[in-house]
Length: 396
Image (cartoon, rainbow, N blue to C red; front, side):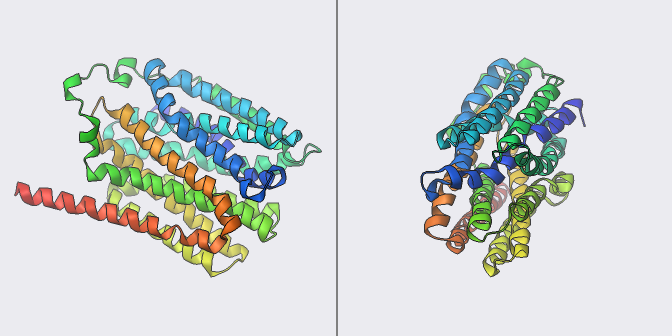
């Protein structure tokens, strides 16, 4: 793999530590600081909203100034967010703590562009492997974020403050790593050398069933993962009274399951195809619901969250690999921006509603709400296949 892919993978390992740390601690700190229980997951939601509202500006900044300065700025912003989170926790100020979530979200939108930058660094046939390789950095983050959250929480008299101080240091390491990133040729990156007459209207691009399978796969994958995972620490620690260590183990295992399959996802996509991998991902989501509904033992939570992570990887990588097949040179930035806006907008809505749903409606109904979205993705995939078969028949 090219040098840039390795740099992005290492940077991902550092920068992505912010997400699992906030996912683990956001709801737990939120239940202590929020004015009412229904707002407990608002810090996590603030992070996801930060991603959703930043995707378009981030892609425009990269198009104008290049990827490298924006990548480094994102890591520095994460470091600042760690300081803000530590201050908000120390002062027991819920609003300030939520602000840190928004800042982490803005930087997270930048991190999400790593996968596209990796795919740009290789030949098209290696795109799936490059995207998967970068996502492997999240495997390190899966260990690093939760471990720093628990270890750092014990270093300072006020719980959790030390965890966010560690986060600041890790994000500065990410910025240092990204200083070695080699900026691609600006003309190629911005596609300024492409004949503008070859760039299609947005409506024409979106008039493809395939693009909606790609976008919806990532949307549903991210939204359902966020919906269930955001509620799990709150439900386990606050409602079922599991220890922070047990809760950390479940969330950590979940995040490992999100990224560990990236060791072979690219290979399997190339061998079996995107459709089959997405179907396996949807099956993993369905089994997640069944196991989580079957009982409240620690093993139920662990197996369910591991399968949730696996399903996310297959759907997200599948959607990421399928998306470039739907646009031409010169159309990439705007399609990527739309994709990530919809994906992280859906995740923000899922995260925002998770706290309210589990507080008002309960854990079991929260799980059942996910089933129609699995069915929706299956219908979109059937529509795509039907349209492809119809086109093939017309050609014959």
